[in-house]
Length: 257
Ligand SMILES: Nc1ncnc2c1ncn2[C@@H]1O[C@H](COP(=O)(O)OP(=O)(O)OP(=O)(O)O)[C@@H](O)[C@H]1O
Ligand SMILES: [Mg+2]
Image 1 (cartoon, helix red, strand yellow):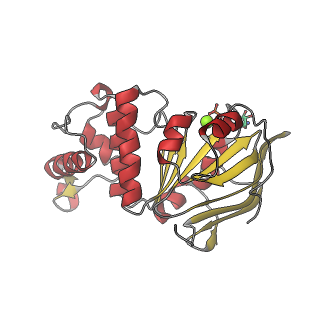
Image 2: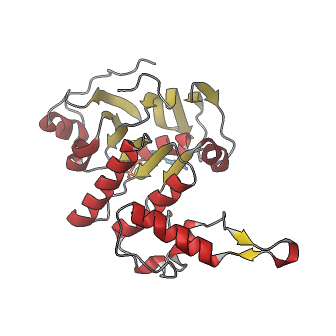
């Protein structure tokens, strides 16, 4: 395992009014590893990844990236550093084409000055190449509407896009939540191949099986606090399920920096 984390949260707290959504959370994401973030509804998982991706600022604590403290003023700041986030629902837009989605906001152009226009041939070619490199072979038409893709294919598109635009840290918020067995398997394979390329991943899921299939490190949140933090092999499937179900064995381990 790597010794230097790519990203580290140090005692991060975030409150919304009187609601302490995150309470003194520390965690680390390492290159070439999958960090699974587990916890029940309302535990603070999405709020946590929003602090990692510049959507929400912590009220206390520090975020380090590449060894230095960072302050995100916007999601764009996080993206520019190489933090790619795939949100569960808003990762792709259904009524535009595969290629348009892939290049949204970063369209390739051809021609100069007043003659500059969208370079659809280049966009189409690269989008298909990149999606195929994710092992999705059924998509061969870049003009196909994203709304006609399956859930797993859409996740693959969003992951391919994040990686193509230079993500070093890839954050996936419940990418398998709406998927069947076969489609989930595709997403799990994508996670593994991103890890093999040295990407640091944060993977949120409610599914213990998926977590145990790919997780190298695990953080279980309960009511905004780290209930447990452990590495692969340290806990049995039973223990993980117990923790996810409400933390019978609530231990406040893992609060170190
Ligand atoms: N913008 C906000 N304003 C007020 N409260 C918020 C806001 N965002 C999150 N919260 C609160 O913070 C807590 C944690 O919410 P969060 O969405 O992070 O949970 P979660 O673990 O992602 O849950 P789920 O599994 O249902 O997605 C909840 O009590 C939620 O109501
Ligand atoms: Mg959530």
